[in-house]
Image 1 (cartoon, rainbow, N blue to C red):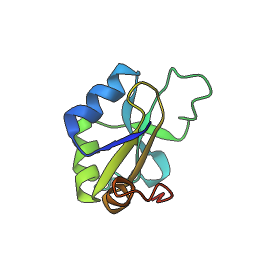
Image 2: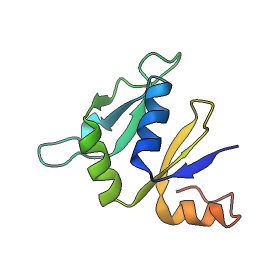
Image 3: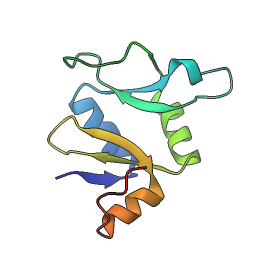
Image 4: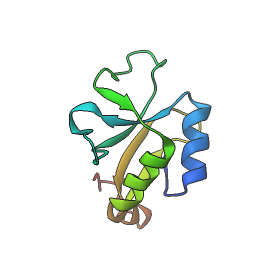
Length: 100
């Protein structure tokens, strides 16, 4: 079952446990703007990270908080999705179709 968190330590530990790294979508990553963020898994089979650029955890979390995001993730797996915190709240209240 997927869980949702905004806790930086939880996100970092979960990502690193599965070989994940903080990243930004390359075409949106410009000077002064981190752009769209993702957690990439470069060693995972069928991982599509060709269009991602690794960034620091500090850059990742600064953008994560600025955009009011949350991580929907599977604690014992590699599934994850970055969603808006409003979506996370809806999911916590039973709306499991909330997607963004």
